[in-house]
Image 1: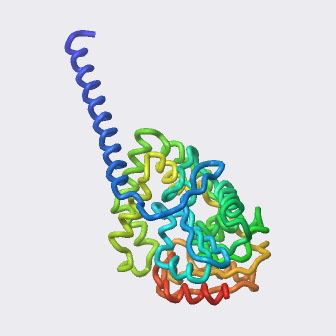
Image 2 (image 1 turned 60 degrees about the vertical axis):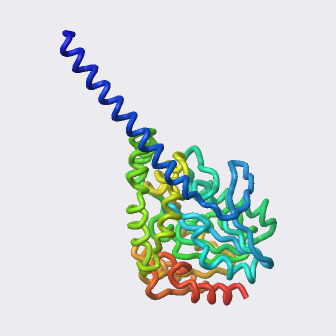
Image 3 (image 1 turned 120 degrees about the vertical axis):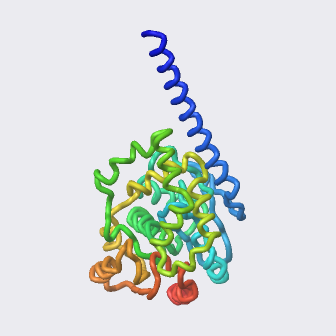
Length: 314
């Protein structure tokens, strides 16, 4: 190799090393920025067999477990608009599922059955008696899987637009990008690009009918939760590919406890036709449609939502 070729090769190597070095520093800065706004609300910790589970415990009376959605950046904070009112009548537990909020971040992608096992362990160790479960969207699927595996722990279910009625398990094609999304440099870059505040806002706008209810504080909360640490990249990959999903039709069909199904009429991601299917299979349940609401009736119409919860659990 002549001198000029060697010099050119060294220049390219130096430029490449500089580029990668700068990229790594930028990625670290992104995580540091998100950490500055990390959740500082009071919560408790349950040391599960897999890691620490963050949860809020409020009120007295019959136990009511709240399970948040399987959405990028969500956490137990999803229930902030209703939890204080619920705690006046019930002993409310709102947990962060693994990979979300203040709970531990799994080292590998989790399936719906692992999440259901976590719910089972939490109910057994912390609540210590059968509980009602109020669960939102993807979290409703986790509750249904738990009801199939551990029916003795559940007294009743209030499910907000379960996603497993329509989509079921992720296909091989959908999960194919999982490996590339988990790579340390390029995957991290995709993770950071997919969790910007703009992307978080776009995701919320798809889920909400009343866009004016999406506040800056909400966007900031979802953003900091989505970037809680570099290991949150695993949660991003799980959500992006639908790796967590399950077909919950069989579990729903076999329910042996009282249940209510809530659905936003303007839910574009999980259309109301899926509720029609549920009602045709199990006409013995209670079905409620919220007008002018998307995925989150508890956020978009919390007053009517709370009235219905009180009526169901009276």
